[in-house]
Image 1 (cartoon, chains in turn orange, purple):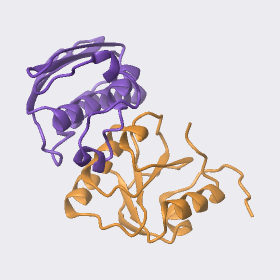
Image 2 (image 1 turned 90 degrees about the vertical axis):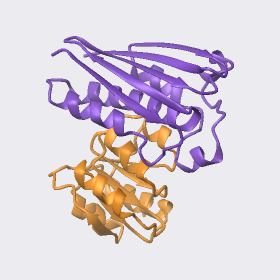
Image 3 (image 1 turned 90 degrees about the horizontal axis):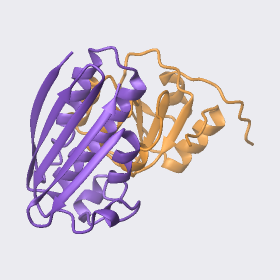
Image 4 (image 1 turned 30 degrees about the horizontal axis):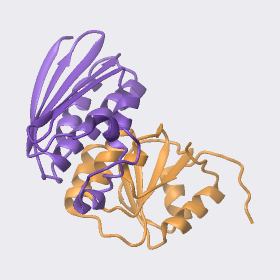
Length: 121
Length: 138
């Protein structure tokens, strides 16, 4: 059952909803209001991404770079991807939180939508 | 604030792709520029930098920061663009599988650059290289 009153959530709440593991905290008090799921970074770069959680299965350094350029401060790597040391180092430097989860992008999107995050258009 | 910066971009070096754009964004953060304008500049430069890494052999990014605007010229040595009109169409791409695996190469780079810049001038000579000039007003 979907009960979606759009609301704000902290990093810990995002992590809890998707049963993830926070590999890197962004150490900000950001209230996330939206989420965007894509493996295509050019698609991510098209939209306004303030206060948005990026959900992706593309586990490369370019996902971190894309987040940096788009002012995204939280990335969820779905499908049990392995995040490299280089990626974590860059994420730390750019104050970007990194969460990993075994759930698929579909599951993560569903849970965060149900939890109250809005889509990005 | 008046500042000039210059960065080399290596073709094919995907792990380094974005470093130049990141440096520019970091520099601009020191000034009183809105985060939305900062994002437009960063996205346009990053897509342009990715284009050099993805398609060219090497390139140079020349950045000119003035009080009211930033102008960036990205020049590369590479295969160039046969048909600029076609390259500007969303969805048209000549990118390799390697580029696509990095989350790019869907034919959205140049349209993204145009959308995020106030002025964009693109010229190219096949088998020689490409020159892209981007201006964003603060």
